Each structure stands twice: as structure tokens, then as C-alpha cells.
Image 1 (spheres, rainbow, N blue to C red):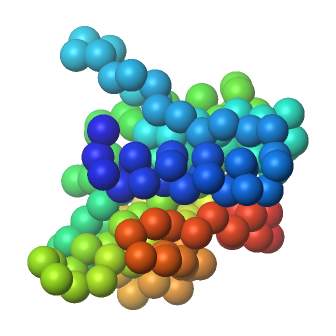
Image 2 (tube, helix red, strand yellow):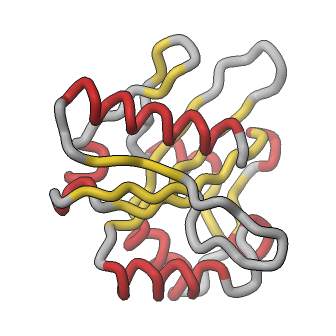
Length: 152
């Protein structure tokens, strides 16, 4: 589990606790010989909080998130199938790292938008495109969860 994934789980659970929302974010333990469908799952009886989140953390100098490079060979298809079958809303959370001592930014992309790009044979998202998506704000080292990021 990456630090970004732990931070997202912790931030969601803090948000749920402070907002008195019956929901929980968690990671499924990854086993050596089994694939993991998504990085973070959020369970709730409220549809807005029934989520599946894939997390990607990249260095800004990478220039883009490429479907062929940053996702496994059939990962996008497996995630599409899981989201369809489970009824979860899907999100891609992208953490942009700029190097030691520089601030970190994270943005959220609705999975339906990613899926459309993927199915139209796009190669991925440039850093500039990622930065046009809603930013997950930070206070200190913690992400601030804002429900409007995935309900709009």
C-alpha cells in the first residue's frame, strides 16, 4: 500500500467520522498471487459514498498518465467490470509529486470520464489535463475530503 492510498483512506474515514456519516473507507489486503481490483473501497448505504477509487502517484516530470504504462494490461477492463457489477461510483485519484521539498497536489477524475477516454483510444491524460480536474485540497499533510468532488 502506498502512502497516497493510506492518506486517502485515513482522510475519508476522518471526513465520515466528523460528518457523522455511516461509511467506511478501506484497502483490501493484497496477496502475492491475487490481483486487487481497486486501491480503495468505500462502503456506505448512501449511494454518494459507495465508491471505488484507483490511486496513481506520479512525478510531475513524467508528463502524463499513460493507460499502457500506468495501468496493468487489462486493469481498466477489470475495474470497469467491477464498478458495473458492484454498482459503485468509480474515481481515479492522481497525486502529482514535484520532488523533495515541493508541495504535492492531488486531483480526482470520475471513472466514467476515464473510461470514455480509454474507449476512444486516447493514450492517457497529460499533467495539464489532470490539473484541470477538481483538486483534492490539503491541510498540512492531510487531504480534505469534499463530497462535491464526486457528486457534481
